[in-house]
Each structure stands twice: as C-alpha cells, then as structure tokens.
Amino acid sequence: MSNTHALKTPRGFSGKKPSGTSKAVYPPEESFNPEFIKEVEQSIQDIKDGKGIRFKSVDDLFDYLKK
Image 1 (spheres, rainbow, N blue to C red):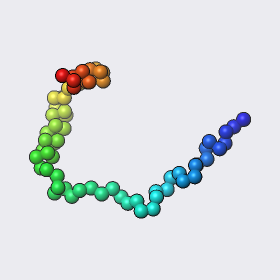
Image 2: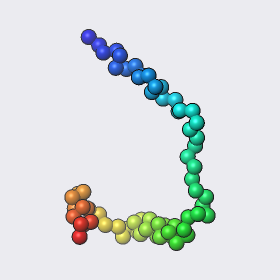
Image 3: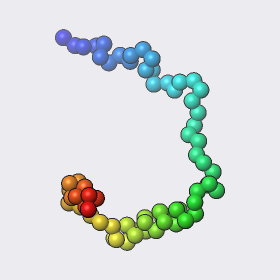
Image 4: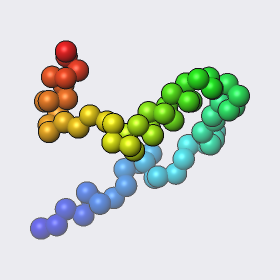
C-alpha cells in the first residue's frame, strides 16, 4: 500500500516566493571599516600560510576555548 499523499505539496508551500520579496540588500562598501577588512584579510592569509590551529576533535576545540 503506497502513501501517495506524502509526495504532494502542502497548501501554501508551492516553492514560489511570496509577493513583495526582493533581492538581498547589502551595505555600501564605503561603510566597512578598512582596518577590519585588513584584519580579516590578514587572518585569511595566516591560515593559508599554515599558522592556524588544528584540533583533533570538536571537544578539543571547546576545551581550548574554555581556557
């Protein structure tokens, strides 16, 4: 006996976007703090250079963060 109604789309969940929704709005680039951008870029470069910390497990990460 198959359960065919499980595959039907419930009412109100057709996958269409509701009316009035628009694209995501981002702040202008001028509003970002340049020092913060440099800090983030430096952090990314440090990780690429192998200066990041690796943990064997999530528990090790949480233990490190508790210290």
